[in-house]
Length: 570
Image (cartoon, rainbow, N blue to C red; front, side):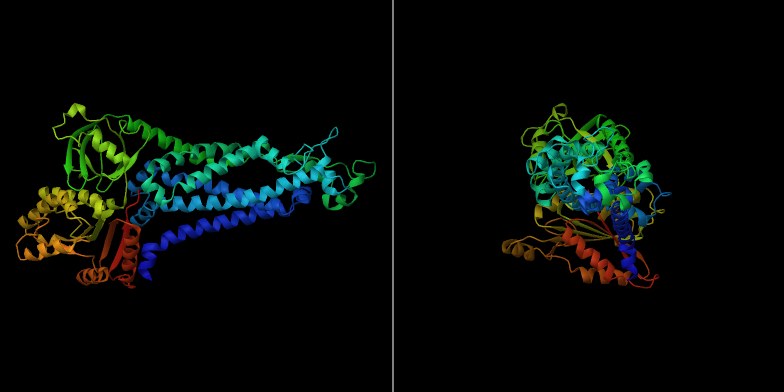
């Protein structure tokens, strides 16, 4: 329980506060429209659908205020790097920015659905009341505004009945038209954000996600038409609706209640979203400015298993271990930006990324760099590259622990390449001030060729640790999860050799998947009373497993061993 609070407590607290504020706003604004006499006559026209439309509108304003903040990457990187602003525990919450972004998006979708359905009833009843011939209170209220010195309460002024009248409202009124546009934009944004679309059709996700610009413009002007109207304060002083509604046929006559006067609610959404929109605009301007700075590709290395390494230089570029950048190659696409983890160390005079060829964009980059040709590629023929970043991730906190577990799956090993390189450089110079004393490194991969580009780094680090009589500093386990019977026979024949037949390392490659429960128990037994950082760059299924093991293998005693789980998110 103690480590559950350590790992998840602050996240759960933030989510509960956010949910609580949504419930509070919904209930507060529901009562604000369902009880006060100001909206007594509006409720006669629209019944409870009035409050059911306005309450989710308030929640929409609140969540639209939040939705942009988790994707202000420069702001988050600034907060991560400021020890005065953020402790390690708070920084771990910043690493879950995209999770919160998705939660807020689903909340927006929920309140949009409630708001839309309620307004569908409001429009139907407003149109029906306008064309109603019976001498009812709703018909009398709808006729207000037709005569001189009268203000209307029913925004629908035509005498065309449903369903044509409803369509007329939807496509000719500002509120209706903007409502249709922003709802369609939201549907496209959400449906194109599914994992399948993002992985298989990234361009669809990328372009439709930028419909958020249309969404926010429509959102801000949605209420400018002031179709939700209530009785004015001056009118309420002369005309008490709870007393006067019974004799509505005598309104305006001598000795009777005066005709009530109405006004529309001023638009409020802009007050909620102007601050985050300004922050996000500044974010995009900073990112645009940085993307215009010259980037030079100094080397392109082709690794096995369809992986290329780009080594680059950029004036003033500074990085920390495990950070990532966004890359654009205009020769492939003038608009698309893709995130890549930096595989270089801060101590190196260049920065690098490893790109696995898995889609149209990466295939285009592969060809643009001349990797599809056999002859040597001249430097001046290499494509122009734009770089935005670097941005902070969970791996930055590796050096905050004395003991860490680093788990990479497939190409997910890239952030730990930066970490291990930095460790190597620190040991080459002076590691006396290094807080990190022990690394447990796990790499899970399906194909033997995928190990080749990373083996040289591990060999260098292995040799460096042996030279300094600190071979126990790094314990690494490489797991081959995809292999056939012929490979197994070959590996058994060479098992007794000093070095591994795949990687050339002294540590032999293992086959299958780790028994994580045993691994955690073993590490916990070797480091009693320690806070052990667990860092993952890999799939969600593995993240769930490691998170559960981090919680179950930690002790309730604050002085006992605690595993602190961290996951890379882009």
